[in-house]
Image 1 (tube, rainbow, N blue to C red):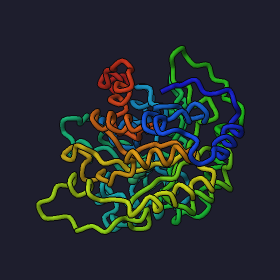
Image 2: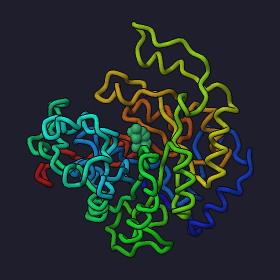
Image 3: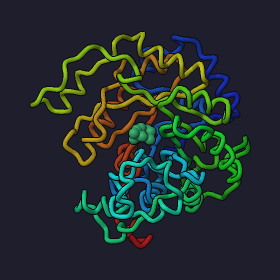
Image 4: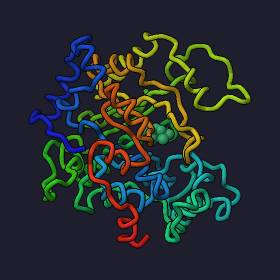
Length: 382
Ligand code: G3P
Ligand code: CA
């Protein structure tokens, strides 16, 4: 959602964020909504289109990003990896079996990492037909044959419409890609996406302009090492530390294994952080490395939806956690939320934005007029 950013420069805003002492926000503000977003150059109530509008079109493909852009998402979210020949691409998984036909094209390489493929090889894959098979109610003939996109191609989409969304880029499995932060720096520089001055592109009245301002890029990572590398390589680009529970993430309280008849919803609902101190330690690391915010996982109320098996996580945005982050001057962008019931529940807790596969639904939740997604896809020939 566009918002009236303060006129302060990005460096000033960072400075303010870092100078906010602990405990400066009162409980009411923490619980009912942050005002931090008016002081940091990222939209309040941010609509972050997770792998594009990936409920309606195959994730991280051209129609998914075109749809997200034209709907009016603030950010196009992507997971950054690098091909064997050094090209930056938007792919989520470490391997290609789930959402391409790699098993047909390269049967011996189903379990090979994305990083072992050249761009030419990746471009031989069909990144759309899996979606038609998995979700026949949303299938479109022209999704078959969709290609994996390079970062350049995603930037072209971001720059190519009336709306000017920003890019919310995750360094995915960064330990596999030494120096990817530097490669990204060079790419963003060459494409004119860095620097203090807002891009001077005319934008229609009411259009999204996030891509023209100092918050046009937000970097996100689960990796502490990558957060540090981003701090070194792209010090003036806003960055967010993603949070997860257990297995190298925030320390979890002891819990019984999932029961045979226990639903995911029930299982994840009882996964808890070990202590406030365990949560605070991750906020401290984010702050120490100049992050503007954190990206905690959400507990989804709906667990039989199309993405349920992949997007079930513990609730790392309980009210006290959101309050603790805000008190530390950190925004809270929650992943990955698709249902109105969850938008409502977490917004009441004061989160500052959502990663969502369904940007149309989130925009409606935030009061924007509903739009005909099929008409948008039709317009682009899908
Ligand atoms: O980047 C936020 C969210 O996308 C993290 O989860 O696994 O979908 O990249 P993942
Ligand atoms: Ca991601």
